[in-house]
Image (cartoon, rainbow, N blue to C red; front, side, top):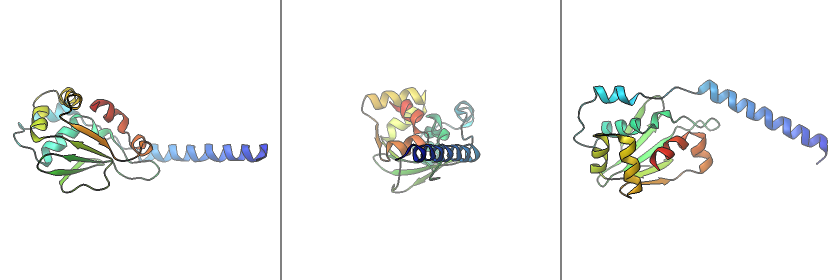
Length: 160
């Protein structure tokens, strides 16, 4: 390549990056949840269902996930318990459906009792200990670039 072609290539890359950043900022939604407010108004959780899963995800910070800025795919988390699978899609809200998972970014495998224990106290601390004690398993399904583009780094650091 000639120096002129290299300069043109660099300029094109900078334009693409600038355009991507502008799109990201334009479509970026503030999806953070105040877990303390949610805890103060939610009832005591006695069984694992879609609402319990949504509370759990909110408390560990999944609400801060966002669409991939280039592909616009929403973050998808699969929570697998010994009895059911929950497909969780994050957009403006955390949408939880009891169904088989497909096209998820990460799998979180745990038990109903671990979920109930986590929701009865400090969720982040409990889940982190549960992962360290191998009672909860986090499996990355999507590639690292996809996970980074959707904001999973903070969530992954919370869980590990």
